[in-house]
Image (cartoon, rainbow, N blue to C red; front, side, top):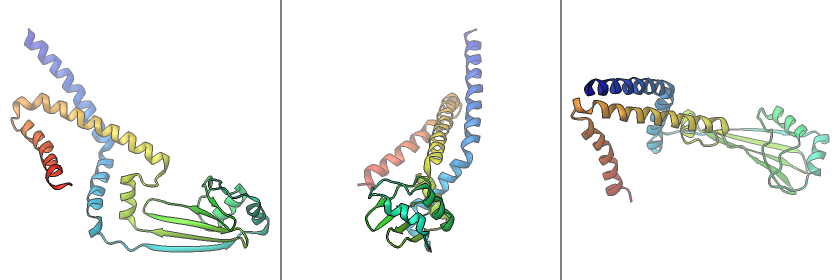
Length: 208
């Protein structure tokens, strides 16, 4: 009787573990492939050559909008006035809404970092000249920055958090499934132990 109860309990937990394991694996499959592949490219970044592509644009702000720029006080955190930001965005083909700038008496400097590259924009507060420069380091750098969450914004940050939780569910359910099958698979725990011992030895002996 007790054996039947144990078998029913085992079947119940296996059923739910399998369900959560395959659901979490399906949800994080593409993300795991992305992070595994970019882990290789990040670890071997010195061997992967990339030639940055730099593009530049320039324009001159209309006098009416320049008057707004001249009227603004120096402020390290202020964004451009909306009308000016809209005009510059259209002229340069970029998005400047709510981007904070560094205001001095001579110019306004906006840093525009992005995954896989960098960019900046300077507005001369006297002449109204706008200078924009963008550096693109290629797709490998782009996906590496996605891996690190570098300059990717709030939406991608949320994705990383959700993906991490989903991956934890996948790993933890897999661990419990290993435990339930370990009696019939003697190599289970030695392999799990190997996965712990090898990184630990590398850390102790080779990382200083």
